Image (cartoon, rainbow, N blue to C red; front, side, top):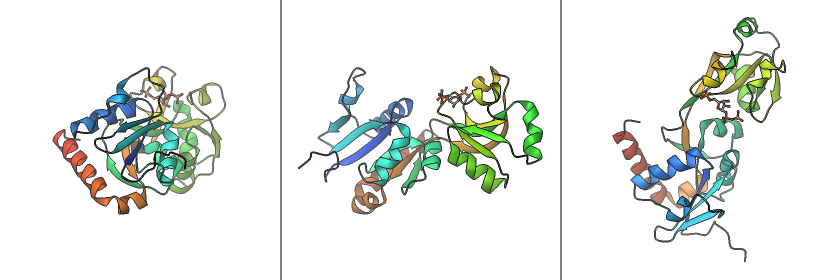
Length: 223
Ligand code: PRP
């Protein structure tokens, strides 16, 4: 039979590659969960095991984390709220990890403000078309054209592709350096822990303890 990450007895974590994964590992260390193998920056391995604690970890592209968790290939995932909203998978969001804080915003040149006020049929570029659609169609009841981009979304208004963008703002420096500004706030974002609903039932004791321990550390840190 094929050897898979998904063996019973193991709790499997899917982590979004990059900064979030590093911060997650630091947080897990504070509750006594570590994975030495994963710390080697040159490793090309995809899956890491802590035999003692019966844990497995793998790194994936952020948007794939909710997919692995929905299908039960991972029991637990850590990913940004932006990705959770955009992917809209059947998973439980159980904990706000308090890092990776930023905001999803509608941004553009100051002149675009009146287009928003008058509910004009504007063009909106975004890496997050579902979030943009939900915001304009459901929250604002404004009909817009949504154009999906894959990055450097700030180019949209600059090169005349779109009137505004829906994008992540962290420090605001990308906007400032390009003469753009926040026009409306869609929602606050941060890293969240998600759980497969079946795992939540079948491995309830282990997962609940994990959540409790993490919550305690987060509360101590005032997050
Ligand atoms: C993100 C986001 C903004 C920028 C915001 O992009 O899409 O472009 O960071 O950060 P700031 O407010 O601190 O300037 P990212 O660097 O992830 O790359 P991307 O544009 O290719 O998505």
